[in-house]
Length: 210
Image (cartoon, rainbow, N blue to C red):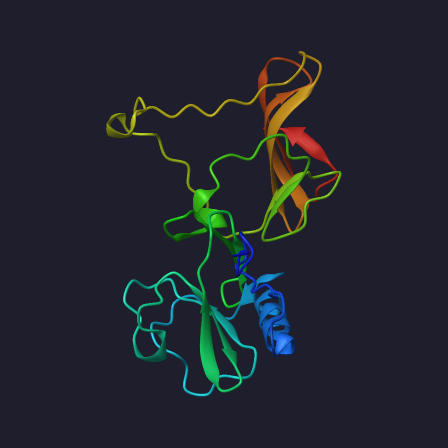
């Protein structure tokens, strides 16, 4: 007997001499419409919403869903023709969760946030935090507080924290520039040689050593 469904998405297959072939075909189309380019509204509900719209999709991330979702933990669900349908995920499936603006991956056991599994970013050309980085400032951050703290010995560190700044040669500049309204007021560092200097300015254009 031929297989009744495809191996990966479990799409129903037409059988030889089958009656009502359109039913099976439509079932496969609905499954494709649910699972391809998968984007769901939410993943945290443990029971169906009161007034779902036709075609609404959800992830059931909770361990013990209730009501019409009972027994469907971990599945993708869709509201179709007045009823809920569920789809069993496979390892590697991706789903965009709209209310979190986050991408989730099914590990084979649970749905994991892309952010939570991200452990390394290498060779980025620009990074902007709360603002847009550009060619002049390839790293830019717009925030009210920042914290650097030492990795404790209990976490595999030394408990020390050393912040290293390096310039290419003595004639280059290595400094901290303090501004007010994007106009310079003080600069501390190795500005053009290897001597520590502090310069101040009242207007951002005329500077003197303090």
